Image 1 (spheres, rainbow, N blue to C red):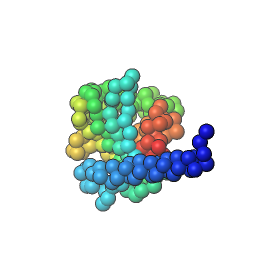
Image 2: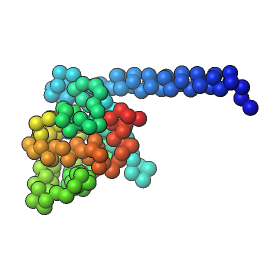
Image 3: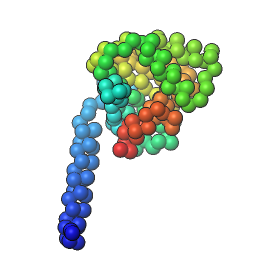
Length: 189
């Protein structure tokens, strides 16, 4: 049976290890450079959180949430400037990315057929085919504008507040299909 001093020593060790892991995570975030396309949009970018999406054990992409200021809260993301940087681990066609995005956007509620078709056309224009290592960065502006970059080059923008809310809600909204990824992006894990 452990003595009180053994239990106290274990608590101290766990506290020290937890602190070291948090510090290591903070240092990693501090060392991750902001994508150049964000620095052309904002004067400074802060890495809020990051994660990895896997499907059936296979890595699909790594994703990072960038903000203009630290401390984005889960209830404020739709009203703040932010960016999601996705680095793909596999090849995907633009149409597939657009269709999957629309499916995920519908998780937040029904989308009228004519709106869905308009959004699908817009995404097909701004999303390229991607190969492993390619990056797509989506920038959300609070006025309802989404800008999309492929490997640092501007591909286009969508001026639609509901599209913007639904698109970034794929990862940050309450209805996300990946709640643990949402928590990682928002820095809650």
